[in-house]
Image 1 (cartoon, one colour):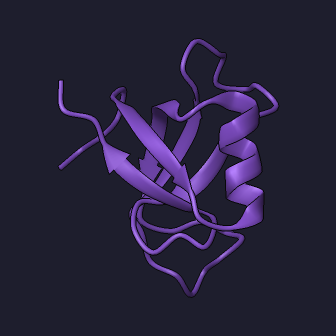
Image 2: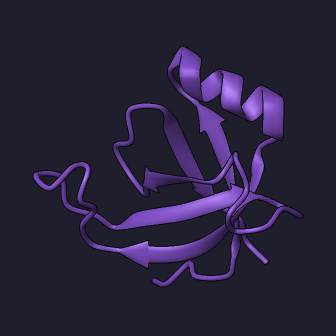
Image 3: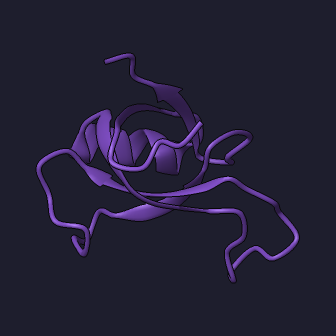
Length: 80
């Protein structure tokens, strides 16, 4: 299921993730998807490039998260 262009909710798991959600909110937009990323070549995807709702793709808060089993976040798919 492709999430490209859709909105998701993030739940912080680690302290880093909780801080990010507190600072930027829990609603994020998916800008890109891929099966592999260069910074973690041994972990398969899907990986989602996301940013807080209402921000540009190149904003400071944008980041890559693994759609499942991410160390910092739990990704919750929003039903439209």
